[in-house]
Image (cartoon, rainbow, N blue to C red; front, side, top):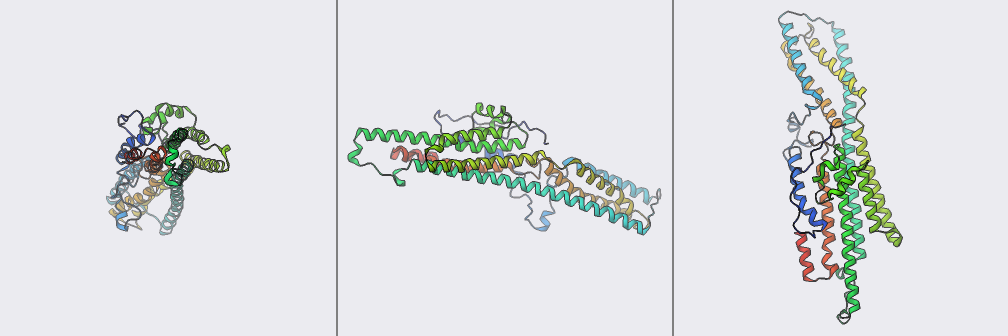
Length: 413
């Protein structure tokens, strides 16, 4: 498993909003720019426009840096240095006549063919498994984003359906009737109900972002209480402490979402509410299923026997190549050094990239990691968009005319 990370994603938390009556959207917007700048600081080097991508030209893809090739993973660079020193020492001894290496041509070809064939098969399996592991992780994060969009969109539609504004098909009150005190009281009650429903909906929407943050931190073996600043504007410290004290923080967030869903969309209120409740509940199940898949990938690296066998064949190959090249039949002389180091560089590159995916598919400091921070920011942008739509109905629900429209513009700014 990756080593635990206790340093939060956001290292400098801005001061809280000055207004004591800040809405969930106000809080989210207050801290969102800070989270985005933190993401650019942490992952910008890995995902900058100038970074080499697999879709670039042939020659450009050859210019990967030492870090992007993951040669620092699992001490691979140390093996590369050993191969260079070993090949150099053996070449010097052979060229100065201290040793003489002789192979029969038949034995030379058979030995080299057997080793390279076995090594190629093992490396192909290793690389294929790493690519599947990486792609499955990326696909599950994509599903989390998609299911969040579907669930939040349905909850927004539910609020709009239950609290239609006059411009959305509701009937505007007649001027003669508007002076009636009973109608005014009824309108005020409807306005309060609309506001309460909107606030409950917003609280549930923000919990979807809390789930994405918790899933990312769990993939980095970080407890929520060690990353409190990541939840700024999303969860209060007491709620973060509560989910952190649970055995499984992601499940605790899903349980909170289910509780909020039961209060927001009571299934006993009618067929529409029951259907919507069932669909959103199914999406919550899917979110937990995707998180479980990411957890399985995190806790299930390649069995040690496969890695041990592959690295044993790699070591035999690295020890044998200079010997074969310096034999009297091959007689590569000083070309033995670059050939040995070059072949080791290529073979170790495949092993290093695969090992990097096994060690840290969700760690930002690894070059082959999934951009989990970017996925969380994508969820945040989606939730923010839905909250903007939700609070954009505020002025119409409250029927405050120009004042209501002014509050709407302030929120969207």
